[in-house]
Length: 532
Image 1 (cartoon, rainbow, N blue to C red):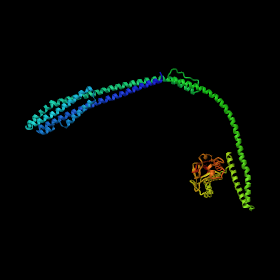
Image 2: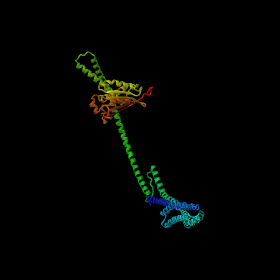
Image 3: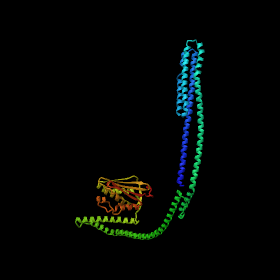
Image 4: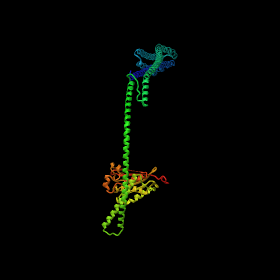
C-alpha cells in the first residue's frame, strides 16, 4: 500500500472521530439544554401554583375575617379572584404553554390536561368568589354573632368542595414532574459522561494505533535514506539505497540512486575538465605574465616620454620667456606691433610652461612619485586667499563669490601651493561656467577626522553621461567647449591628482542648466593642537 493511501486513511479516520466527537458534544448540549429547560419550566410552574394557593387562601382568610367582623362590603372586596390570583394563573398557564412547545408529541396530552386543570381552578376561584358574595349579601341583615358563626362553615365548604381538591392535585402532579425532570437530567448526565469517556478512550487507542502503523512504515525507509545521504555527503558516490516496493519511498530511493549515478559521472567529467583547466590556466598565466611585462614596459616608456617632454620643453620655453621679457624691458626698437607680438610670445610661453608642469605632475602621480612640501596648512586661509585672488575675475562677469567657514583653525598636513592650485582650478571653473549675475558658494566644514570643502555654482552644468569623464585628461564636455573656448582639459585631472596625493577624495555632481557641486575631502592634521 502506498504511504499516501495510508496517510489518507488515517486522516479520514481521525476526521470521522473528530466529527463523531463534535456530534456527541452537540447532542449532549442539546439534550442538556432540553432537560434543564424542562426542569426550569416545571419548577416555575410549581412555584406559580404554590403562589396561587397561598394567595387564594390568604384572600379567603381576610374575607372570612371581614365577615366575622360584620363588614360584608370589605369581605366582598377582599374575596378572590384578585390581581395576585390572576397573575399567578397567567404565569402558570405560560409555563404550561412553554412546556408544550418543547415536549415530545407523546407528552403533550398531559400538558393539555394541565391546561384544563388550570381552567377548572380558575372556575373554582370564581365560584368561591361568587359563594362568598352571596354569603356576605345574605348575612348583611343578620346580627354580628350569627354572621360570625355562619361565615366560617360556608367558606370552608366552598374552599374544600372545589378549589382545594384541584389545587392540591395540581401541586402534587407538578411536584412529581419536577422530581422526574431532575431525575431524568441526572441520569442523562451520567450517560453522557460515560459516552464521552468511552469515545475519548476509543479515540486515544485508535490514534495510538495509527501513529504506530505510520511509524513502522516510516522508520526503515527513513533510516536507509538518511544513511544514503550521509554517505553521499561524505563523498561516497558509489553508495546505493536498496528499497523494494511501489510506494513513495521506493520511488525516492530510485531517484536517489539515479542522482548518485549522475553525480558520479559528473565528478569524472569534472576531474577531466579540471586537468584541462589547469593546463589552460598555466598557459594563460604565462601569456598574462608576458603581456603584463609588455604593459609595464609600455607604461615605463610613456612615463619617460612625458618626463622627457617636460624636461626638453622647459629649457626652450624658459629661453623664449626670458628673451621676451628682456625685449619688453628694453627700449622699443620696433613698432608697437612687434611689442604686442613679443607680449603674446611671453604669454604663450607661460601657458606652455604651466602645461608642462601639469603634465609632469600627473605623470609623477601615475608613477606614485609625487613629492610634496608638507606642512601644517590652515586650509581656511588657503581657500580665502583663492577667493580673494579671483574676486576681480568674478566681478568682471558680475558673479558673486560667497565664502563661509563654519569652524575656524582647521588645518591639514599638505602642500599649501598645490592646495591653492586645487581651489584655483575649482573656482576658475565655477566662475567660467556660471551664468552672469549668478553666484558661487564656497563652504568649509569639519566632518569627523576630515575637512570638507564644497564649491557650488549655478552655471551651465554637465551632461549626465559626461559627469564620470570630467577627471580624464584632455576631456571637456561639449557644453563646456561651446560656453568657454579656453582650456585644454587638464585642470580637474591635476586637481584630482593633488587631492589624492594628500590622501583625500574629490567628487563632482552636476545637473545640466542647474549647476555643479564639487566636494573635496582632506584628512585633518592629527598633530595640530586645535584641529584633531
